Image 1 (cartoon, one colour):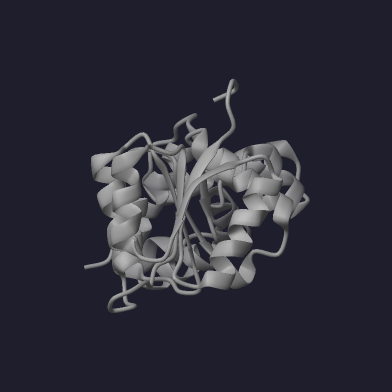
Image 2: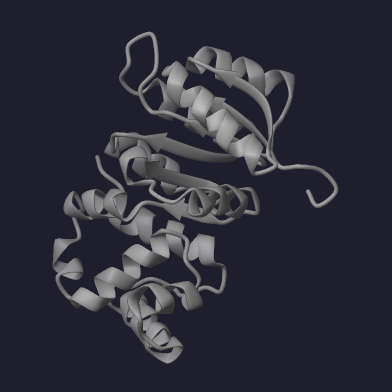
Amino acid sequence: MADRPLSVVIADDSVLLRDGLVRLVEDAGIEVLAAVGDAEKLLAALDEQLPDLVVVDVRMPPTHTDEGLRAALQIRRNHPGVAVLVLSQYVEERYASELLAGDAGGVGYLLKDRVVDVEDFVASLYRLAAGGSAVDAEVVRQMLARSQRKAELERLTLREREVLEAMAEGLSNAGIGKKLVISGGAVEKHISNVFQKLDLEPTDAAHRRVLAVLAHLGRVD
């Protein structure tokens, strides 16, 4: 990827938002291979050429319900090397939990209204393409609220919940420390406590630990 620009396919039925995303990522040096308005065209674009990353909305034609997320799941099954970022106004919990519970990295879910920094957004794209993760804390909160493991969640302190959410956002230990204004040692201690209280095996792979947490806490029936 170092010898060529990062490549992306964008899918959103809003012309204004789609064109805005195209300009934003092109300004960041990212190559846009296609920009489409529905899931069918998105999947067709993937059959023609494989990008490094797909950015897709949840609700697109024809029913404007969950076409984008179902397309994202199909992409992950058929093209596991392509990173997927769901960028939406909504948290569609059923498919979101299925998407985020996979074993591979390169999966993200961000809420449009909560993307407030262009540099952070672009950094998320590169992180996903490199196999990392990017999950909005609000997505995690809503999934936690539906979790069947409330007894285990209640064992977490407020700070441990904050660390868990920061982990899901894809932040490194250093990034968590900076965000929460705590030391590296404190971050490691809180992460260890989270894994212990939720009966999760710790791992050095940041995106895998995030996905494990989401799979453990966020899966819904």
